[in-house]
Image (cartoon, rainbow, N blue to C red; front, top):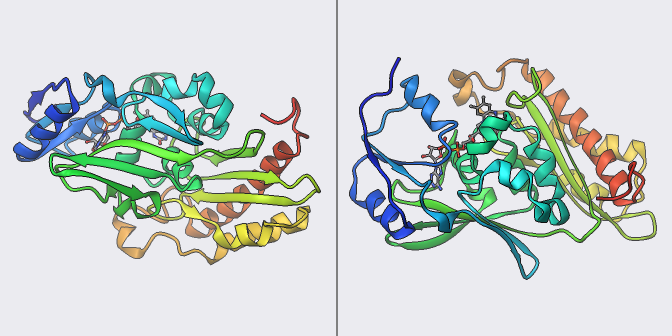
Length: 303
Ligand SMILES: Cc1cc2nc3c(=O)[nH]c(=O)nc-3n(C[C@H](O)[C@H](O)[C@H](O)COP(=O)(O)OP(=O)(O)OC[C@H]3O[C@@H](n4cnc5c(N)ncnc54)[C@H](O)[C@@H]3O)c2cc1C
């Protein structure tokens, strides 16, 4: 199959791109093309206009500011994976990036493209959820911020209007030396995850958990924050039993609603029951691994 005809637009500034998005009917931004181009080839999508974001340098950056990490939507996944800054201030982002696709897809694929594509198994959406990220979107009409918990409108559709573009992802950094872990179950290494889980943790210096953030992806159309488990762990001295009990809370979350059965969920690749079981197992594993890192007992000490 070949791509249906479209007009290609190559803006060199953000205002120019926003004007095109506003003016043109059925226009779609093109970031790394690692999801959009296959959809076009398979005719799962067709658009009259593609607006290439690759020549807009102001969308590619990564910096820290007053305790926050700020990443431009067009920052490449590979750039973030190899960034010394990210390795120092937000290592879980690199834990997750290691699991995404292949070197070739990460070389072109962007953080913004992944968040806008919004695959239910996208690791980067999970990392954003762990940090309660804020997404900054712009259109010719102005700018607004969307909390990550409100990002999903429905299955693989972010809550943005057709003339809006994601410009920046921002989140508060965790203290230096915090524990972190991100692990996933997939059919083959580098495939999309069936289920993945991530954890961030700090300790209080007296053997107790001070702060914790936990999430699982693969249970629903967006990452599931394990708030009950977080409450159960905060202020407690962790034991294997406590982690196992906290991980059990995964069982209470609803899987994909039946309306997504035509997309294959929740029985895609595995039974719904096994999907939930994986969520519990991986949640427990990342809690344990993040704690070991938080207390510096992981081989090589805390990262
Ligand atoms: C072989 C292979 C394996 C992969 N494995 C994984 C995996 O394991 N995990 C994973 O998460 N992903 C995986 N991916 C997808 C990959 O991460 C893509 O990079 C990502 O989904 C899309 O990013 P992109 O920059 O290529 O965006 P594109 O494909 O260019 O765009 C994706 C969608 O987002 C929209 N969009 C892009 N940027 C913006 C913006 N700034 N504002 C508004 N809309 C925007 C586009 O219009 C389009 O609808 C894989 C892809 C391939 C080909």
